[in-house]
Image (cartoon, rainbow, N blue to C red; front, side):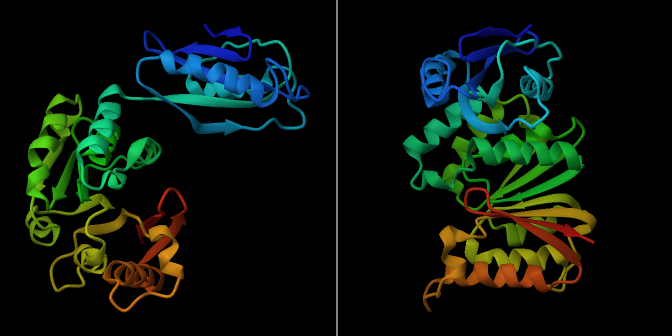
Length: 299
């Protein structure tokens, strides 16, 4: 049962941890419950929950015909609740999603131990990957580039019990670290970790994949695409209806700037984007989330 106190609503799904809705009342530019003051006042309270809070996952704006409490009703229903009768007209509601404790620990340890921690997918992208997996319902999924395992665990959380995810990481020094988190996860049993080059390993896994997440060596993106589509002389690893998701395709904006002759990473990403856009066998859309995602569907 939701309860409102001041500028926030406390929700609870079943026996799970609380989630905070931060409220900003329209028509009150300042003060304890209005404007930025209300959000800032309540933000520390949101940190006391189990798990790591993120308040930038869902932002709802009121429609002109929204009456008192109707905007909150929509947010509450999105969370899975049905009862809500708040007082006052709400201007903005931010729904705080809770990052799974194991993923939060993995994120933190990656930032402490990894040479390039910014390579981790992180909470927002991880949530998107999980949701895409839930919607697409792949039976077999492939990840090229495991890093420390955040994206693999996120996708595995969305997989059905009989489905499996093959993830390939070229850096053998990360294997022990990755497996330690897979072993602790409730979804680890759906994941098959392979150490080595994806160009060598993926064709040997047999069969086709319904979903592929490409996040490996940027210099190899064109080669990954040719391998997946069967353009390298081998059998295609995807089929009609398969979805490919390529990460880092904006590369901090470098793909639209003059490219240095020795910048192989940017050159490869530009070539990859061109290959996809000119390939009549696929359709795609670019999502400007973080460093850019290219969503590609095989026709």
